[in-house]
Each structure stands twice: as C-alpha cells, then as structure tokens.
Image (cartoon, rainbow, N blue to C red; front, side, top):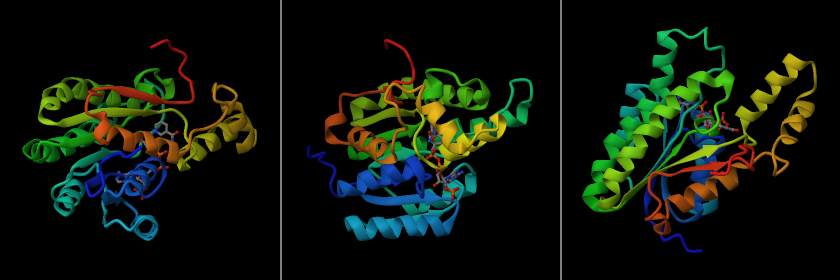
Length: 259
Ligand code: NAP
C-alpha cells in the first residue's frame, strides 16, 4: 500500500533505539525525512547513519533530553516545520503506590504527559496553518489495563490520553490527525531490562523469565519494533485521515478485553 507521505518531514522523539527507532525506520522507508532525538549522541548518530544509508532520506539528529525544557527547545529549533510528530520518552520507574511523593508524580507527569503536550502545542499550529499533520503518541498498554508496579506510568499516560481525546477532535477538521499507540511487551532494551528484573527477583534466567511472559501472550511472543513502526507509519499516512483520537493497542492479544 502506498502511504502517500513521501517527502514529508517527521520529528521522532526518543528514537535511537527500540520503538522510537522502529517508527523512524518505518517512516524513512516511506520516504519521510527525519529529525531524530535521544540523549546519547553515539547511538543516535549510528541509528541515523544507518537510516540515511538504507533509505536515502535526510536525517537531522539532536542529542537532548526531550523531557527537559532546554532539550525540547533544542529539538524544536532544529526541527523547524514538521508534518509528522511522534512523541516518545523513557517510562517512569516502577515502585509501590505508597512510595511515591509529589516530586515523583511531577517528574512522571513532566516526562510522559506534559512533554508530549508541549510538543503538540509547539508543532500543531504549523500543521494547522498548512492544513495537514499527523501526531502519534507512544503511550502504553497500561493506559487500558493498569500495571500495578507502574503506577506513575498509569497515571501520567492516562492524563495524556485524556488530553488527546479532546484535542484530537478540535484539530481533526483542520487536517491534523492525532492518535495514540499503546505498546504491550516488545523486544527492546526496556523489555530485556524488565526480564532481567524478574529473573533476579525469582532466581531464574532471563530466558526463563521471557518464556514465562511469552506464555501469557496469545500471540506467544514479544512484538517487534518493526511491527510497531509499521502501525505508526500507517497512522501517519494519507489513509488515516478518518482515525481520530484512537488508542490502538499493540500487545499480541495480551489484554483480555472485548473492546
Ligand atoms: P528503549 O528500548 O529503552 O528505548 C528508549 C529510547 O528512548 C532510546 O533511544 C533512548 O535513548 C530514548 N530516550 C529515553 N529517554 C529519553 C529522553 N528523556 N529524551 C530523549 N530520548 C530518550 O525503550 P522502548 O522499549 O522503545 O520504550 C519506549 C516507550 O514505550 C517507553 O516510554 C516505554 O515505557 C514504553 N513502553 C514500552 C514497552 C516495551 O515492551 N518495549 C511496553 C509498554 C510501554 P537515550 O537513552 O540515549 O536517551
């Protein structure tokens, strides 16, 4: 299927590895020029160079913490006008509901709710003025089915989801389409870290921890960053113009729900 976005420009945040990289690669595969971001410059440059070589698109890189005001300012200055925005950042740390203080919630809200909102506020006016735009926020399956140890994530991402629900309907008539992608477990560094934690806690190998988790997923495996990126590229395509404010769960069927 021709996605109709060749020659567009996309800002993909937190994209040197994992799901963000999957989205960047899928967009590049459609001929979209990229602005890529991550904190670590070396991995970011490596990922960008591989994309330039493989897909022949322009890639601008900005090594910065997207959750900080200064980092965002650097990224936005380098990005200029973009047609497509993919928001992403690391998730908040796990813990127990009774451990978290106000500062912990503020940090989670800053990273996983207010950062994507600030990016949308900065970039959607240009998209509206040009009559076309796409925004995909990478959130989490925990928005739909809470993960007890990730209470900070459950809370912050639910806040973003509420904002998107209203805002997406305010901008759709101007040609700007905003949706969220909700990953379940995917084969990334974060998944490996989670499996490592389970392995240590249960005294089993990381491979055994992974097999145990895979057995809970109807698809019987972890998702891949490439599959995730393909879904993102579709939501950024010309064909997604009637998909407004939706929350697409990509979890191999792990959340057992009818809707
Ligand atoms: P990952 O493999 O650890 O990759 C994270 C990427 O984001 C890296 O490129 C990292 O580079 C960058 N990054 C992290 N914090 C950043 C920041 N503050 N500013 C700029 N770049 C930043 O993680 P992932 O698995 O792709 O996860 C992406 C998001 O999806 C996270 O919010 C995660 O909680 C969520 N999620 C993932 C899964 C899963 O199974 N993978 C499931 C549910 C939700 P640097 O470290 O160099 O900055």
